[in-house]
Every structure is written in C-alpha cells, then in structure tokens.
Image (cartoon, rainbow, N blue to C red):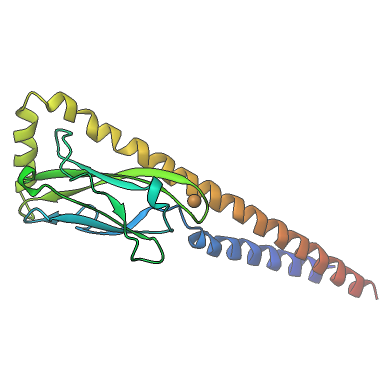
Length: 202
Ligand SMILES: [Cu+2]
C-alpha cells in the first residue's frame, strides 16, 4: 500500500509540473508581439510608419492602430491596415505625419479582433522620439507646460487600465486549459491507482 501511495504522489507531482509547463502555450489574443519602432523603444528620428506583428491572425475590418502625441493629438495618417500580403494576417501598420512628430513620447493604441478565437482585444504602448538618455524628461516637461496638459494628464493613468484586462484574460484562459489538463491527469491518476491497487491485492 505504501508503494501505491508513493506512486500516486509521484504522479500528482508530475501532473502539477506538466500543467505548469503548459501555461506558456496559452496564446493571448491578437496582441502586438513585436513592432518597428519597437515597443517602449527610443528612436532618434520620427519613423514614417509603425509596423507590428501580432500573436494571432487579425480580422482586417476590425483591427487598427492609432498613434497620439503626448497631448493626445493624432499623428498617424488614419491609414491603419492589416497587411493583406501577409497570408497569416499577423502584420498591421499605420503611417505617420512626421511633420507632427517632434521629440517626445508617442502612444500607440491598438484594437484587434482575432480570427483564431474571435476575441476582441485592445491596449496601448509607447515609443519615444529623442536621444537615448535625458531628452525625454525635457520633452515631457515642455508638453506639460502647454494648456493641453490637462488632456495629456489622464494618459499615464489610462495606460495601466487597458493592459490590466489584457493580463488577466490570458491568465483565466490558461487557468481554464490547465483545469482541463488537471482533470485529465486526475482521471489517469485514478485509473493507474486502481491498477496498482488491483496488483497489490494479488
Ligand atoms: Cu484570445
């Protein structure tokens, strides 16, 4: 009987390890994965566009990028489009009116509809135009002095809010797929347990 218990607890440990290993496999909607300019990066001059690849395929009619300066003014040309030349539909871009883009922090707001799991998701990230160190605080201070600063003020607080569901939702998804796995593992466990008990009785 001791051996049976030992086998069962060993299997339990295996089940837990296996379900933990599955977590990274749970993809999180059609979220920007890598962009040019890169998410949170600092570039020296205004790029003529931003291009992002996403974790899942997008519905071209329900996915877009919009880019705003620190005062909340749009700086993109409103031509956001999913690249139809990418058969995976995982590339999206929007071009910039670079005349509107001095040094400063720019917010990219994205909204996507995944054609893989039919889930809509949105969020935002920033990139900065300026010299790699020191220039950003100056740029921020300059725009803060403008009367439009009140519009810009909610921006930083708004940033964590949209990303909060983004981090919670995949976790729920992962938890659910783990639950499924754990159930299967438990059923397997029960079968093995019965088998061992049967053998032990003989
Ligand atoms: Cu999803």
